[in-house]
Amino acid sequence: MIMKSPAQEGGFGLVEVLIALVLGLIVVLGVIQVFLGNNQAYALQRKVAAMQEDARFVLTRMASEIRMVNMYGCLNRSRLANADSFPAAFDTPISYESGRLKIITADPNAESFVTQTTRTLPGLGAKWLIATDCRSEARIADSGAVVVNPGDVLIPLRQVEYRVDEHRLQVRSNGSGSFQTLIDGVVGLDISFALAAAAGDLNVAGDYQGSVADADFDRIRSVRLALQLSDSPDNPMNAQVGTQEFTVVAALRNRMD
Image (cartoon, rainbow, N blue to C red):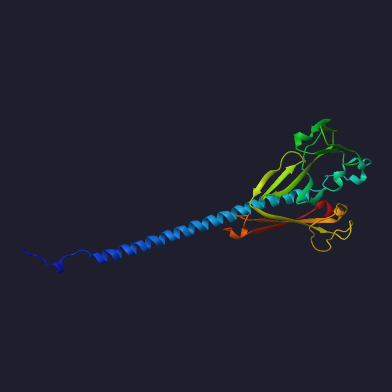
């Protein structure tokens, strides 16, 4: 029988095993660090994408409604014999006071009428309904229903209010009911107006202004909305994502034409 000396026996010593364990631990820690880094980056990207989607949603909605301010379709109020019977609110269809933006905006309506009928305000979600022949006659209802004659055009009008309350952008329709939250995480909403030098001018004169007197509505040509969002609106300095600002400019079509 041949005996092997201890120097000739195979296997690993204690030092080698410890070195292998340390190297393995380093590799595992590296993999975990990469995973955590990727996970954090993914979470940040999701927050940024959510902010962008929220901003796109509300700014597109608000800009669309602003563009429809003072929109009466085929109707020219100056040609109506009863133009003075329109509600006084129509003289200032856009205003911004005490952090609240108020807009009177028209909703597209493609209905055609071949027989006399009636349409109700609740049925169209409107505050006012205008039925007109687009020439010399217009009937307006601010409650109940309006009679629509054959060949008339029906124009539903809504009053929309926006405000920022406790870092939430909220909206209310037709001046009744409670405000509904559209998005949260709002740091601020800056609204400014570009004005012409005179009511009859088409071009803007000067810089954007943060407030406009009711008497100067006829000079408004565009509205700039600047929305700031953060994942920590109470303390943006400690947010994971820095405050993001999104801006859109909406021209009042019926003032630019």
